[in-house]
Length: 233
View (cartoon, rainbow, N blue to C red):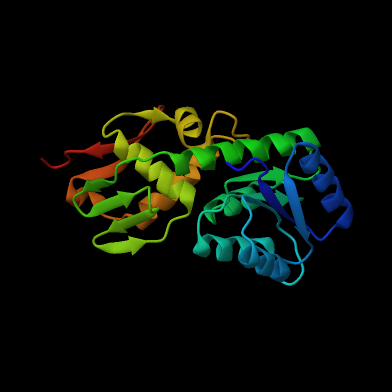
């Protein structure tokens, strides 16, 4: 990570932007701000930041659309800001590829802690040199963030791919939701275990009929999940 990581704060409330800037700059971050979704994308393309702190409700283009566009361009971490605090909004943010979410109103220290946690996790995945995985009908490259099923590239947000890679790296080993949160999101993730269920559900939808290739993502009732192999053999 650079000595002074850059954060792009996108919020249409100037008072919130000023408060966020105050906390982040105090912690040593370089901060840029934008009040519109479309302008934020222009700023993102002009000079990609190390992390985007992104409000959901924005003029020009809402935060969901901004997130989807950013995800098409790469894996820059995104932390969503939502005033609603409802499960649906949080789940949608995660499904679209957000690395974390913060519900307004939020504590400044908690906000900076989340930002640092996400940066630590994403920096770690960039520095590692893991091996690619291959199973019948499936290949997963964590280095290129690329998954292919039946020879076709499958679009996955970063966390979906990381869950798949982690489980497939430990075939037939059962992991609880809490263990998966620790291993994939990091011990300092602030969400709840339903986050794991959402990602597993999406993976199964994108990898249908995998049993015919001899593997599948299994639910172990009362425990958690595993990447089961040797099926039908």
